[in-house]
Length: 427
Ligand code: AMP
Picture 1 (cartoon, protein in one colour):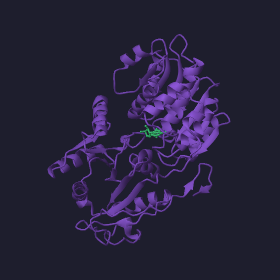
Picture 2 (cartoon, protein in one colour):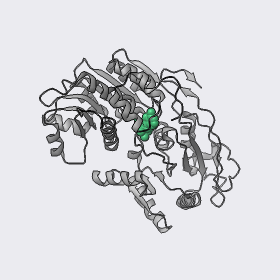
Picture 3 (spheres, helix red, strand yellow):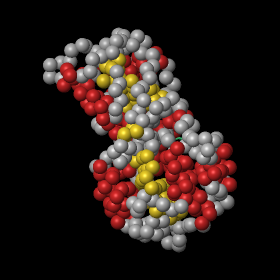
Picture 4 (cartoon, helix red, strand yellow):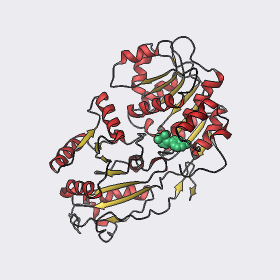
């Protein structure tokens, strides 16, 4: 992976042979920055507030030291339905992915940790059965965890380690109440690790209340390996442009984001008429269908996946080359999460937003807030009209760049200016 310093290696972090051998098997030659800067503190039992770019190796940053504690200190769930480490995440897919990582990292342990995934959309009974006798690790989405607590299937009063991943999302609408209910059930004395890609004000005050003298680790928020582009197009031509780009560039895998479930369905059928097979991924799909779709996409059996923002966070698709915003996300933070699905683990990626006049204003907000300064491009044959309709806010949009010809030409992004979570600017 890129951006790791030369002197800190996994074996200088004091990791157990079972973990070191496994990391070597996985070809993790060096710890990533977030791993270098988090693992020693987590091993010492300190609280942590970490801001790390998506795809930076966050999961291993907390999974490896927690597994090491399990291994060396014989920390284990006591009798009864207690849990030792609780990892809370906003989406089912992320819960499954973190479970898979924990299992993978611990395959060489003589005493395997008991890891239970708790998520909605599947039968609760199987989860109840698995929780009998407690668990070393629970990886959970909040709603189903509360259901299981209400049925006495699990007790949180002996949790020793709490991880909140994608904490900014967890504190947003829909989760904050559930999260607060869960936190009230936890013991005061515990280790808390909070990971978030973005740090809005509510995270800072939540973190102050939740963490005890935390170590603060902040890495850059922009993924430099992603070539970001914005292409203007008249709204009625968007689907045709998307089909053109997919064919012209011969992308083997592309994740397309749309804002509504209906748009995803429509777009898939419109692409089908243009000879492109695409699958859709959104919350109307049953959980087992979602799981199957995602693994088929990860193995390359599905080339075009059209998704709502439920696929925007945490999902790790190795070597995903392209993300397309067919429609813009609601917030600048969501933009960062979406594009972070590509360009992971040091790989190159391309993130392209297709915007029509009615989205210019919103794009400018995203552009400004994320300090992107992207130059608008056009693709020959799909040029947007020069003038926006009279009632359109895009009249004050930035001037457009000259048409880019085939649209294949890449531009270097400006170097990222990073604002750390405590307000100061870094390069
Ligand atoms: P994450 O940010 O946790 O989703 O991780 C992104 C990707 O990086 C995953 O595919 C991990 O398997 C991979 N990864 C994590 N740590 C390392 C490392 N030290 N060396 C190489 N790959 C890594």
